[in-house]
Length: 168
Length: 152
Ligand code: SF4
Image (cartoon, rainbow over all chains, first blue to last red; front, side, top):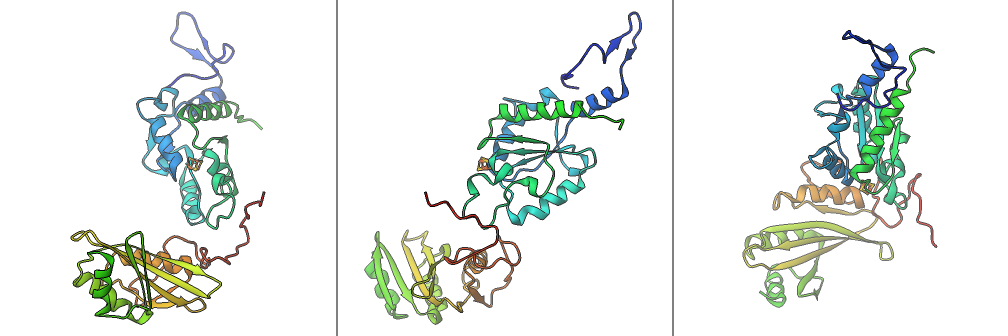
């Protein structure tokens, strides 16, 4: 597991003299989810190059618990929409999203995935933001966002996961 | 070969409607019915073995769609541009896929972007646009969610 974000004394207690920790089910499930996020291996345009770079040695997102890009959407937890969604790609993006098991999260990376970005005007082929077709958890602005920004977005997503409640 | 020599050789086969020299490259306009003849002549006898691209230009004021074939020769390093003007309301032309296989995707793209019909094309399906979209690169294209660029 990567770094435990948001570890708090009141959630995690080590009992002296025994290999036992006490915490809430909610916290342990959220922490397990947040620290082992697998991404769908999927990129749409220039932002995908920056996403690959984020996963490569120099910035290495596995340090923070985002782990491996999953080879199939059925094993993935988070979808990074890295790039322009064209109208021709809409059915494919939707299908990838629907194949992912719950709980699933979506990060919209770059101006294109947020709003259509540089292609907003006079474009016959671009969807104006991926949130028109699938729900988005975190938006990362930039054209393209730097790897640091993507990692920041992931950490924001982890913080969001840690606030999930199981009781209604 | 310079462009005059290429032009003389083309003239022995078909008569260009119009020609001009542009940056040292011959631009010859031929009749739509001559296109297969001229392309296979260029390929077989003048050794233009590479089809760079096929594209089109929309001329709404003349009611024309102009198809452009750009050929290159890896042997003599020459370039030539063949142009064909079609009627804008019903643009149809023969495919050259049987001469250059690579023309297949170029023709599919030109067909969906400009609404040109390529006769006898082996796989006349859409390549890049969604179903129901017609000729987005024509100057008078309209679609519901197109946001025009603000003027100022
Ligand atoms: S936001 Fe910029 S870098 Fe990213 S896909 Fe769009 S154009 Fe490319």
